[in-house]
Length: 426
Image (cartoon, rainbow, N blue to C red; front, side, top):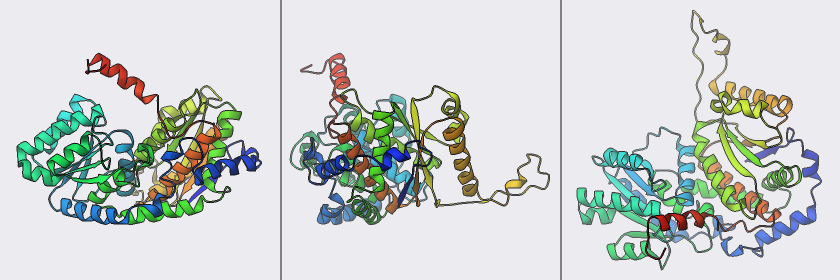
């Protein structure tokens, strides 16, 4: 479901001749869970080992909640919301007709954003899913306080209890303790799956169920990707090797993931967290950035084409089949001179734009381009793509000889913030 094209990467021969024994060694570290950080490799077999009874229960709770609300507030930051949002927007698009709208909170401390959501939902029927392993993270913690209070004030404690769901640790933590005390329905974040790898767990699956998305198709795609990456010659590993060669051997410092579909923008945000937190340590790793073309061709495209060289390379997501398409209308006057396009659909024009930009950037601009062909943009494709990138990320991290599954640097800003806020103990 994802095909890699290295024709414009400038390293196609190096990828083909990459040390197979090294690749096999790292692959076995992932599959056999023997590498550093292996206690967080629970996601590797999750598409077949996930708790089927819990999924059945999630479906019942989500379907019941859908009958009572028209807005679900998804409380979480980082991996606790990015996967669900990436999936929702990729699959449903940006203007879904589903009766339940998902709004993401707790991923920012912006007072304006938070207060605007308060004003937007206070006359709507809403529910809350609070996603946190500990329940003590500042951003989602204070957001949950605000919206829990609003729900209780508007609907009363009994209704609020029926409309609040917690996705948290199985036995411990502040959120688990609160959920038990208040009687909230709870679902479990597995101990052996980190946040940025958690989209197939209740972290991502429960909000998507409430949004009306067919999560069985997501698991179907993830399972197919798991099967397709069981051998060392798979496409995900080719991508990881290409990144490694461009970074570690050719000296490139940044990778820009390019989408030509606006509904894929949050997918690229999920991808940025996945690779940044996994690789960015010990002074190593590529800096992951993203663009939406053709929009950003009228800004960042100038730098990519003619700016400082040997800094970044591009990875292009080319979607073969859009969810929707439309034709360019014909105007009798043709004052804008665009009637020549009326024989083509928007998607056909988009595909020509991709071809033209790759030629410009890779050939004239001398920027390496890796092309990833996606079949489509549905639930099965999301499941496949998310697992595919997770597998590539694990291999990429181990090639760099770092632990892809921790994020010690994230704690530094928290400690500084707690000191400045005079949190007890800091």
